Length: 195
Length: 179
Ligand code: HEM
Ligand code: HEM
Image 1 (cartoon, rainbow over the protein chains, first blue to last red):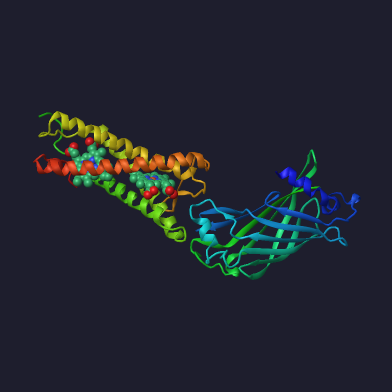
Image 2 (cartoon, rainbow over the protein chains, first blue to last red):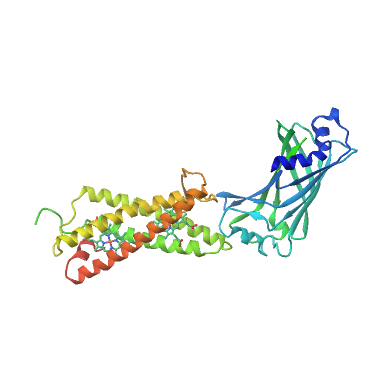
């Protein structure tokens, strides 16, 4: 599945990553990567009572990575997450997350983010600065990203990027259960791109 | 009759009633914790932690009971036929086995559940886990723990009813096991 998808994405492959990973061959013409649950993962985790963490995922989303043609070390990122497609491995937890006290998926089916990755390198961390919109409330949002791995597969090189950041859920109006669940929610993203 | 004592020692009597109270409390908490909706997450979490805490205390108290029982002969009991005594013995041995097995099965089930939650004694003392989350194993352990627990509760209820019956027949069981 993922291979097929990566191959389909080959259309876009001459864009961002050759530039970013091997600047010498940069010829930025195609500028878009499409990401979704087949080639990326979006996870979140929360601390409870300072005792333990729970880990969940979003299983339906789509995002675009667009190369900024004038600055090959920058990229635009934009994504939409289906808030109802949330998983958390406790019975009843997913319904609670979809309910009005949390994502209120019936009223706000999508969460969105958009931002700009700045100073992309193939070594070390770079920053993605942008905005996150959850429950129709928009807040600044930043992530730290890095190239985690680059490996050769039959259809080409696959680059795996990871990114992580944090939101305060109260800033998006999710104020329930504050004794049990910390305000800070960690977000982690992993992306595999055929380059 | 023999040199056997005529009642259970004070420690044995106290521990019998402590374990009985803990088993009933653990069972009530089990129903409560499963019944509470996830949206009541703090209460639900605390009910789970207390269920696990009291369940593990049952295990320790029963180990102590078995040690005491090995150290001291059982008091002699008159007034019951050998058949009834044998049945009572089998029932009590079954309860001891379940009193140990049910907490162990619960401890294993708690670790195998898909969502890892730590096990603690009163939220303070961490209890180690030896299994990783394993939904297939959990799908087996959870009902086994539950059925074993309800068997224990059923056996204990029968045992209590028979104790009352024998007391009414004049067999001095409550003198022997009274608090
Ligand atoms: C969960 C509840 C209970 C458990 C697990 C339990 C377990 C046991 C066990 C294992 C013994 C055997 C002691 C031994 O031979 O070493 C015993 C004895 C006894 N239990 Fe319980 N019990 C429970 C509740 C009750 C209740 C509610 C009553 C009274 C209504 C009761 C009355 C007695 C009496 C009188 C004896 C002593 C029998 C004798 O003299 O040999 N038990 N119990
Ligand atoms: C004498 C001791 C115990 C008794 C009588 C007992 C009883 C029960 C019962 C009746 C249930 C099923 C509740 C229901 O579905 O309505 C249950 C579930 C459970 N128990 Fe226990 N238990 C004991 C000890 C323990 C211990 C020591 C642990 C863990 C350390 C434990 C962990 C669990 C777990 C994880 C479940 C499954 C709950 C769920 O479905 O989420 N139990 N127990």
